[in-house]
Image 1 (cartoon, rainbow, N blue to C red):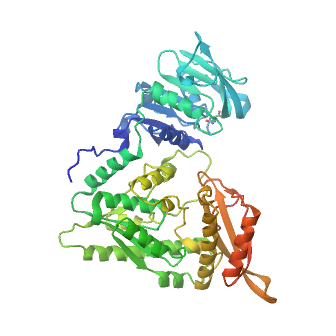
Image 2 (image 1 turned 180 degrees about the vertical axis):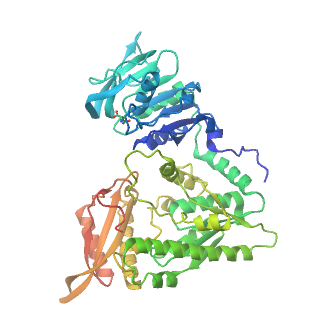
Length: 540
Ligand code: GLN
């Protein structure tokens, strides 16, 4: 299909601000905030060499980081970036990096750490504040987290902001567009931080605010078409979740019936899940869908398996086996003139990309995540299928936005995440068909009641789990000895930390009554109040 739309990656099409990551836990938020301002931004590790960059950013931000610039092993930016001639903003470690680049004696360990809120005063010069503080109050609340400080002002720099403890809370080069701030504008604890990032990227870098989901969609569809060509076929696993559905809808839009979605029913999906996915993908979105029913195989293979990692491994492995078998059938059954299945669709999101490239500071990753589309190694490496990842530049809320643009209904777009190993990791210990049935029914009641109460969109993830140790109860004057249902609902923005949702007690009371009355085999319901950390969101 001929297209006049350029088929380049977003950083070649949109004005882009590059964030170089020195390992701060907030680095990705810089990118988030810029995109909220409709400015496209990407993050790369601080070890990126300028010579290896195939595109030119409109401006560069150096993030914070856990090291001290004067440490022997501290990471340093490729000095070529200083010569690129585009504006630079250093945040915390980034500021210290700029100062250290000027002279190795400019940064020292402070006598006290500054951690938490501080009031920053923009310096006036000839009655004017610096462009970086344009439109901001003369004194604003910011968030700080540092132990090192500048010992002196680097040569050719001037002070543009101070706090009561930091004489160099903000600095700017006299002639070049180079800025440093000791505080973090990217966190919500700095209420006006986004305005400061706007001043930098729009006011100083002159980046156009042109990042819109509409343009991205048109752009990405053209890119998929040119990548896949006129004949090749693409396979993708779908789960009923937001990411795989949006990715599938985008593929359908780009290449129509040459995209084949496969849903593997692993027997541990939610109540009526398969029917709902079929209805949405086939009925509503017109996507070519094959459902492979693996209930028997999965449930018999899970017999006697109690250890959470063993369950995950088994389900992951079996999933690939079934998916591969389906893939072969699709190729054999395809129309005569159809090309080969050469591509595998994967719903990778930007946080996964960031996680895999981010500069690792001393804090290690706590948990690896399971993604239903994320198991293709054997297929990509073993069978030479090429990966296609149309969502790899997007954050979750951007995926939702794209989903809306593709006509996917609100309910699906706002759906809570659901783990690949499904209910199997919400049944503590051994998974049996009876337990799956009970957990499913309880979950369905809990989620329906959350929806009816209008609370669904305020909660990030909710589910009912089953504790197979039994408790004594009394029903109809008879002693019973039955399972315990654990309700869990959390609120979180990034899934790295989370808090239990504060339901009104009456609501929990009603859920508990309905579950005990309507689900055979349950005589107790409890609510899990644990935060993450120390808990995780799922129970296994
Ligand atoms: N590690 C540096 C310091 O303590 C930078 C901290 C940061 O970037 N938040 O000052």
